[in-house]
Image (cartoon, rainbow, N blue to C red):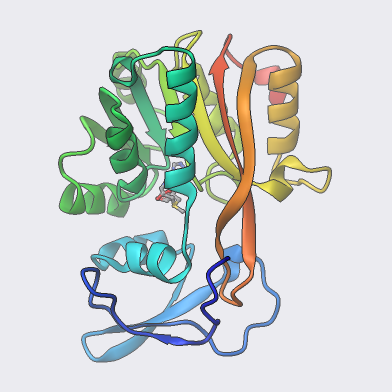
Length: 267
Ligand SMILES: C[S@@+](CC[C@H](N)C(=O)[O-])C[C@H]1O[C@@H](n2cnc3c(N)ncnc32)[C@H](O)[C@@H]1O
């Protein structure tokens, strides 16, 4: 049975979790998920915050967790952690041998999940400083390093800092498309992983379909068809609810990298 919480319902705090007052809009027209918003009571006044204004969300401790995980029942970190763990076990790979780049790391929920799976080394990357600040504030033990960079415009020092990490895994959860991480940034991150390394990511189902305009459907199709990415398992699942209480579906993929993705593959 899926979460039955109604959109527009006033949500108070949950025991043991954040103490914020968060309100979803009462009557929402059918809007895409990057246009969704909520209201949060901060210092006695209600602030309207768009879900994709991550800088504002991360600046309020506990809001990301309360909004996406408690209220909208986000499952993506759990799903990707579970699939990766299953696949590693199936192939007799020790999780502690993995050195992962967590792309679009946010405030570290995925990193925390990957630590639970047992990953040995973890580096977060995000485009906004507020994500890094929130990860260090809320989960200082999770990442061995955390860089604020734009993967499409890496400086030479950042490029060599990342190359020096000798990654053999890449994770990217709930961060592809929608004006967030573009295919070019994903390609760059993918290419930092050694051949044979593990790739685990989630993406909205529509971005893998014929209707896709993000460029990811073509990228993933070409990368798998040309043998650069060997998909070992994929699962369509409910990522979270939208503000109307309807399910948003994503696909989680776990595979191994066979070779770099050349720039021409994106054209
Ligand atoms: C929905 S959050 C997901 C955070 C985390 N992966 C999780 O599942 O909890 C999306 C994250 O992607 C980051 N992001 C957006 N565009 C990005 C880009 N071009 N490069 C790196 N990170 C980006 C955002 O700043 C945000 O932290």
